[in-house]
Image (cartoon, rainbow, N blue to C red; front, side, top):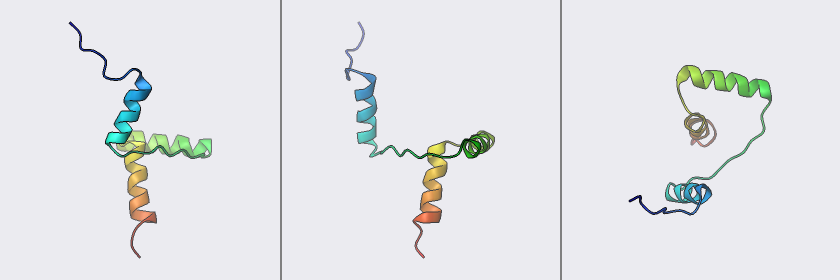
Length: 65
């Protein structure tokens, strides 16, 4: 007998995940050429976009001066 669904839809499941992990979506517009270079670099380094952007924000923009 299958387990009953905890969430009515995938959207509710994603919303609960974001709330549990205190995550917020951030949308930006970038030139296509830059995005292509960035994605190639991510593939080479085997990193996720979230990891790289979080590190850049913390180390470059939010660091104590």
